Image 1 (cartoon, rainbow, N blue to C red):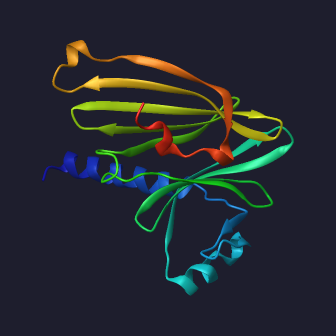
Image 2: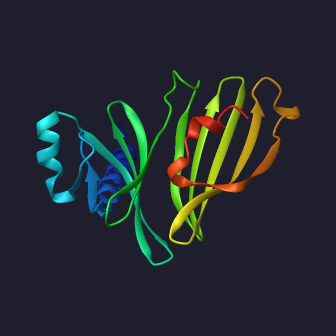
Length: 185
């Protein structure tokens, strides 16, 4: 292996470690296996009791009206999930489908946007879909107000690439949202 290749590999490893080290994970409360809301400092005890492990992928702080929320993406029981919590409790946990339920399914991101948050997913085999679910803040709550969809035909890329936006009227309260209800259209 050349000297330059070794330096390149070493610099990549250092940047990965530095990136991981600079990320912070924060959560005020969690919901344990019994559905009880417990302070985050009790997480280890809760996990030890059930032998369930949770890997936090990302967290974001959200502000909606006068209320602060946490948007958390985590992996638990072989599934990726998204939870939105405030200082009192978990408002909603969105259980994402896996690849056996929707071919090729994956979460692209769950991120804060100017007036709420967005969840972006993709799935498909020949006909490929990317869906972005946009939630807006109204009166200290989040509502699904639109879904942006992009399509792609892998066998005929020149004649694919349709993009469209579906406005949700009336807007759907986050607490009533189930992602699989919007995967077929």
